[in-house]
Length: 386
Image 1 (cartoon, one colour):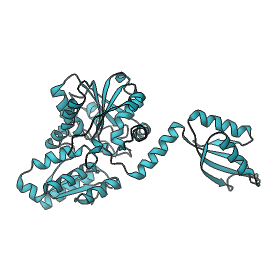
Image 2 (cartoon, rainbow, N blue to C red):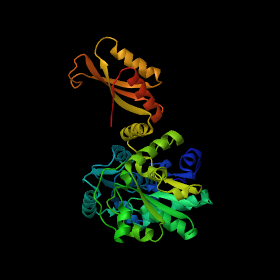
Image 3 (tube, rainbow, N blue to C red):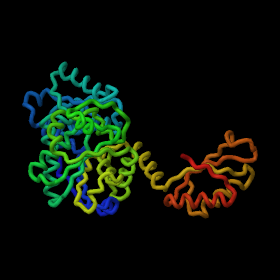
Image 4 (cartoon, one colour):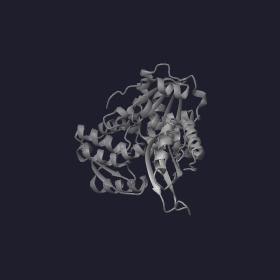
């Protein structure tokens, strides 16, 4: 485990209107903050339990952290991962020496299998977000932030099961009560929001989300007890904004983050935290373990959102020169063609015409409108993809 940097980000400050600092726990050896709690929990075991080994249910980051520090400390580690766990997190845990069992449609089913193996093999179960030793270890991120950004006004932190937020709240509020702490969830998760409303942890149905690290189905009871009177606000951000925030980190900061880590920036970009404009704000970038295949799709969706990638269908003549004229108009408008596909079967009754489905790189939304005007001016009817 390392003390990760917390530099000021001029590009993200320009985007949000706040003075933004990023706590880069994606730079930990296994790519996430989970190492903090994992190492502390392993060190708190008896020698006999360290010899027999530990087990956990995890979608990935907790598993990798336990595997890595278990290897360093000589503690055998088994992890049970639900079937939606990203492939990169499964392969990373195996590479770091863990025995990996993939079982269960959600975290609850993975946990049930882990409990069965723990009883059968005498392994110590280490809860990924609610064990006291885990929460205490995660709190070190708050201590580092206080040292690195001495006049911080607000810390914005992702929250799923609540272990990170609980440790952060306890550490920071114990030393500097005036710092505001804001938790951010995906609209597809909402564990803490549901718990605050019910005044107790409740189960939430699993829904697909880019922020897979937040998809724990519930906030932990120990974590909730520490969070509920210490967190100042909790907001929920949509998947579209999370995708765009991932792109902004890559493009503006040259930093790869996973969906959960992008939620604080996403909340600010979405206008959910207007009160933070002009304030010194720390965004907790809690991890960087995103599947490369998912990252590529996220980047493309972000480019579409920005108007830098567009798709439309133009009707052209199926005679020689029809396609050449279309590409000439596109090039003259300053756009760049990525792909063109001919659609003859569904192009209508006119057998002399064909639909050309075009994917094109553009500068922004204004450039797209300019391109469409140019195409229509030159006699190419345009159908815009929705």
